[in-house]
Image (cartoon, rainbow, N blue to C red; front, side, top):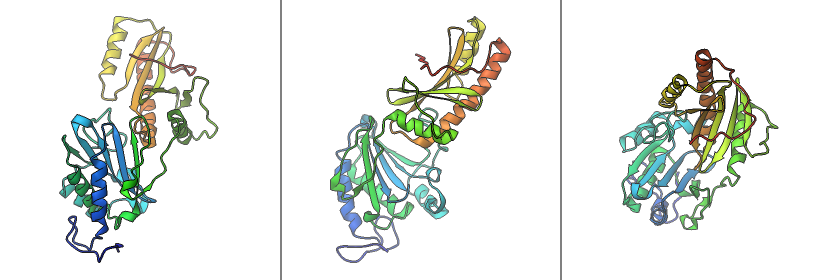
Length: 314
């Protein structure tokens, strides 16, 4: 049951047929004020305490505002949405997720999302955004009262913002350097608890049968590996690499110093550990296939350890 402060909860508000706390009106005013101040490349996530159910806002400047509501791709056990909740979101203007965390990435599906989402053109009206978000919180995610919420606010560079006017507790925000967070993901995926970064600050592991290097770039993490060595550059080889570079995986291949390298750039702001784990698994699977194919066609050795040296592909 909701916890009203100024009278009893009433029905028929925010699209609900059940009693809804009047305190959502207060929160709506506060959220409207904050959203009106959100600037390009700034993010606001309003989530349930002790849960990953959330509504998030991504300000895209002249391109408007994207609002997302969490899907079951990010929820487990009792937090998962049931059919009624998912149906409510779909019937109230929310686009269904276009794929899972592995498929609906910015690189592979720039217009989609692994969450439910709505894109609002610029200028997006803060009051309308707040209303739609609260309707989703109340009906789609079934959060009974604003006191059950907390928030995170940060920009593309990871700088954290405080919006005390929301009246919500600020959730803990990861303030670790990017590569420390990458290292944590690599430790979890490989099970190597004592894995450390190399002297250049990169993370190098042998995963499956190839060596994978994670290197920081501006707002990105680059996964790279050597596919084959001891190869001579030729028109046929370069033509094959061009074919691979036009593939749907988003992996780019280049020949340098008798070695063919493969690399994939993953956006890192905001950094989502699950995305990196999935991309790491897919990258190694695809790279293995590339390595075996290239070795069969062009000889050489495959795969090899690259020694942790960052591979730059322009």
